[in-house]
Amino acid sequence: QVQLVESGGGVVQPGRSLRLSCAASGFTFSSYGMHWVRQAPGKGLEWVAVIWYDGSNKYYADSVKGRFTISRDNSKNTLYLQMNSLRAEDTAVYYCARDLGVWGQGTTVTVSS
Amino acid sequence: DVVMTQSPLSLPVTLGQPASISCRSSQSLVYSDGNTYLNWFQQRPGQSPRRLIYKVSNRDSGVPDRFSGSGSGTDFTLKISRVEAEDVGVYYCMQGTHLFTFGPGTKVDIK
Image: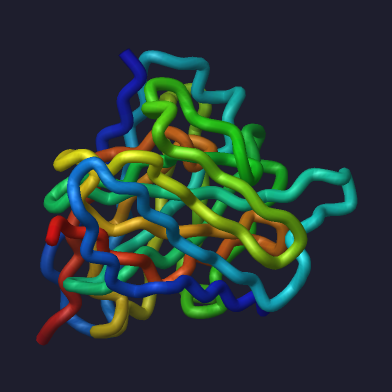
């Protein structure tokens, strides 16, 4: 069945980096655009980034532009989010989503000293 | 940047009764290809979001037909014809015409 599994979350100090992964299965990964969406504790959903099916285009929310990088490895059916210069306000559950129609279970990132 | 607003932000409903959520965008959501990229998502307590509706009125696979979407331009509506207990959660509209922006969410619970 179609499945997305995020990993890589954890507790990290402000200013440090973290890389999230999203392993896809059950569909042709290389045919779909992929998104990262986050949700701060007790808050609503915030779109973070999108990457085209072939990696040719990438777009970011203003809140993460210049600090986060979305990428994908279609040979490994995996989506990534490289997060640099992390801030307390980046604390959230991070979801990956296939074209926004299929979502993973999320991975939690906590930025704290 | 496009700003999405929803009303109400809290919606107590009676089981079996209809419910309606309004979503408005600060700019027209009609894209250059003629499509309007307005989605609706449901997030049940403790669960990941789930898309219910895409391009204003198209139900995703497996979504009960009691959910319907309508609207155009800047004004959109999600309707639940008869609320069931499993519909409790937060509902978000999201535009995908000018990059992507979520609305603040509408919390639906049972009276």
